[in-house]
Image (cartoon, rainbow, N blue to C red; front, side):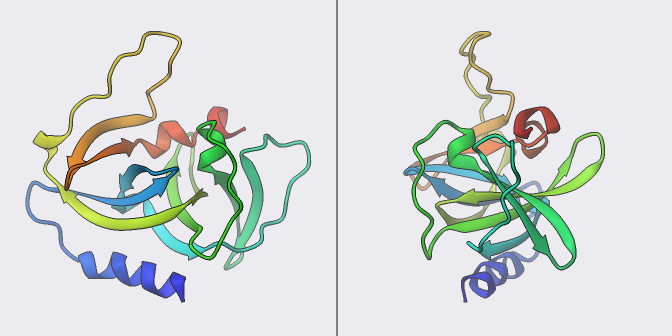
Length: 164
């Protein structure tokens, strides 16, 4: 049920207004994030994954997605947020990541919010917190309907060094 609703959201967005960028937004611990909608392959409700021994805690395991083995990353744990048990609104967003090669990675998020068109002029650079705080996985910050939205760079966020 949730899979169909979420994928219909992606289909409904259709064409992008000229000059606008389109982001799929989701929630983690009452914070709002967005990823480039062109990187989203699929949105699925939480499903059991096969754990892989000796992997970091943020790697939930792998999921067989129509014959492709896809690593699943709990974004809460990757961001050092407290673990929350998965529920019927927990969602896996399957993304295309361009690292050394193009690959598919799923991220576990609390809930998918919406798809938004954002004008590039409304996006600001992430703040500089100095050398000790990495923000290279944040491509920008914007405001949507009075909500601060962090836009994620999936290539930097989910590269082999980050998730391995």
